[in-house]
Image 1 (spheres, rainbow, N blue to C red):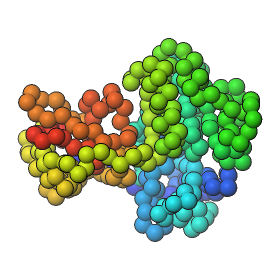
Image 2 (tube, rainbow, N blue to C red; image 1 turned 90 degrees about the vertical axis):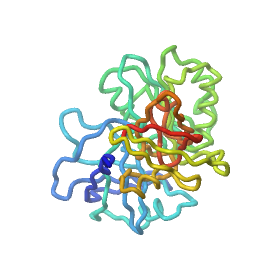
Image 3 (spheres, helix red, strand yellow; image 1 turned 45 degrees about the horizontal axis):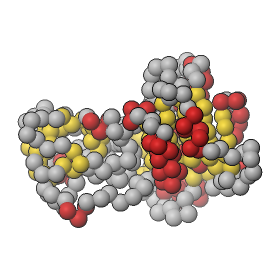
Length: 331
């Protein structure tokens, strides 16, 4: 069989700087131990961080790449989650300046789209990180955008200096403040110019509200771009899963997927390496292209990383399935 693409390259980087940006957010600057340039990336990209204790966690790169050459650092913001299973807690408690960390090379499942259309960037809490990189890139290119940041309080606002440099394009909302430090999210979305591209990133409640307002305002699917921190809900239909078959178009191989296993597990069993990270349909690591074929099954999508338009030709293999029949993958 023809194997899938190899997993992303892993780098060993040094923690050059640690900043306690808010009571619960740490900003880490990661550089090559010998000062060499790092693999490039585009705004919206993320890296997998191998934390002390053996966890792998995904963090967005929180600044636009330099315009004149490869990056010399990766900047990430790590929020310590109260219910942390060990990943964010380790990066807060066990990592110091000078330490070495294994980092996956950047991947982007949340890219900025080309074109002159204005952008409305909606950030909930630490969801600011990929949107800050986008805003910096848009400002550099002279493209129209608004970055609206929703935080619990000014004390919980990370990256304040970077936001200040973006000037009037930034709007701030603090839950504990009175007007004018409040933003009517529904009105902001409804008032955006026709053709505006919306980019949403934040916790589940924020994403649910923003997406609901976008739907109510009639924003088309191809103008909505989403990145979740974690699955906002349990995937439906798990109790009634059916077996199906993966048809690998390049090799003509057929791989059965049992009712109680994922497509990734079935492929791994026959020696086909599909890279995975979150295994919850959030990060996009395991996304591949699928192909419609007469008489064959179509995907039953359960991810939280693909837009409706992307789902027309891509599938997250860690969580999505097909309802019986044969599903053709471009592998």
